[in-house]
Image (cartoon, rainbow, N blue to C red; front, side):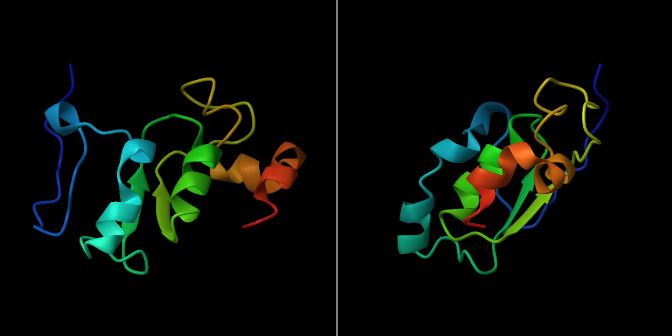
Length: 105
């Protein structure tokens, strides 16, 4: 059973979790920028979803967001899920397998 979680009460924070869930890559980032709902230069994305971190960071960065925090940062072959074991920031910046995909960074 999960205990009580802290959730940022700021009106500037939007959580896409629970009944409000929308996957990060399915959000209308371009539309939010055009409507001035977000500013890519000041937006912070916090990832704690144990999915393929490299691809999620790249998708958000391609839209102009540069401030991204990844809660999980395991060493190679460690982690809670198969994706954690191969695609956390520590692994992607030091793993040769990501060089070609990350050259644009």
